[in-house]
Amino acid sequence: MREPAHRHATAPSRRRVDCAFGLDRLGRSRDWQTAGPAEPLVALTDSGLVAGDWNGFSALERGRLESRLRRMGNVPSHVVCFCQGVGAPCAQCSPRYIPYDGAMMARLLVYTRATGYRHDSIPAGVGALRGMDGYSVDATEDPAVFRAGELRDYAVIVFLSTSGEVLDDAGRDALTGYVAAGGAWLGIHSASTTEYGWPWFGDLVGARFDQHPPVQTGVITVADKDHPATEHLGPTWTRRDEWYAFEDNPRPRVRVLLTVDESSYEGGTMGADHPLAWCHERLGGPSFYTALGHTEESYAEPAFLRHLRGALSWLTSG
Image 1 (tube, rainbow, N blue to C red):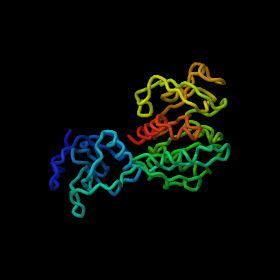
Image 2 (cartoon, one colour):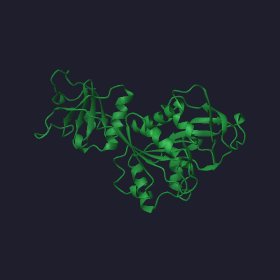
Image 3 (tube, helix red, strand yellow):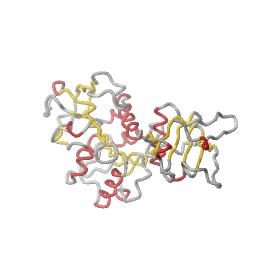
Image 4 (cartoon, helix red, strand yellow):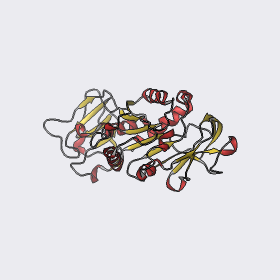
C-alpha cells in the first residue's frame, strides 16, 4: 500500500517518502483510502513518520505510535507534518521535516496509593519503571489526579501494588472513561487487592486476590510464549515471590500467560491451573495484570524487568 501521490515529499539529503503502512491515532493499521479527511493518521515510511494534524495527537497517542515503531526497530529521526491529514497540506503547515526530539516518549501514570497493606517494594518498583528507556513516569498517590480529561495524555496507567479503596467516585468515573476510550492499564502484584467494592475494577484486573502463603521459591510455567511479556522466558521460570491465589480462575475471561506449579511450593489453593499473569481487551483499552513483584529484589531482576517491559510494549503497541 502506498501513500497517495500528492503526499510524497522530499527533504534535503533524504530519500523520497514512500509509505509502508498507515496507523491511526491509537497505532492500529489503517488504509489511507478509508480514513475520513478529518481523522488524524500517520504513515510509517523509510524516512520516519508522515503525520496528519500532528499537534492534535495526545501524548498517549504519540507514545503508542513510538512504541509501535520501536518494536519494528524504526524510531524516526524526523517527522513530516501534513496538518490536514489525508487532504492537501494547509498553507500554514506545508509538508516539512521536523527534527525528532523524543516528544513521542510514552508517558506513564504510576499510582501507588495503598489504604490496606503497603508494600515496602513500592519505591523500588517506581525506580525500575523510571529506569526503562522510552517511558517518562509521573508517580503519585493523589486520587485527585484521576479526573475527567486529565488522563488522556498517559499511554498507560499503572497500579503498582495498590491496595484497598484508592479512588473516589470522580476518579472511578475518570478511569472508566479512560479505559473505555482505549486507554491502557497495567496492574502489578497487589493491584488485585484494590477496590473490592467496585465490580468494574474487578473486571479490569481479571480476578480478585484471595490469599497467599509466605514468600518462597516456586516454579512458573510459561503458558503463552507468544507475547512480549513472556517471549524472553524458557518453558519454566524459577523465582522467589509471594504466590497469590485468587477468588476464582480468570482463564475464561482473559489470555493467560503465566501459571505457577503448586507442587513447587507450599500453601497453594487453586490446583493444577493457577494463573499468575494475563491480559485482555474486554473493556475497551488493553489490560495487563501480573501477580509477581512482591519483593524489592524483583525490581532488580532482569527477567522480571523484561516481563514488565514486555507488558508495557504490548499495552502501547495498539
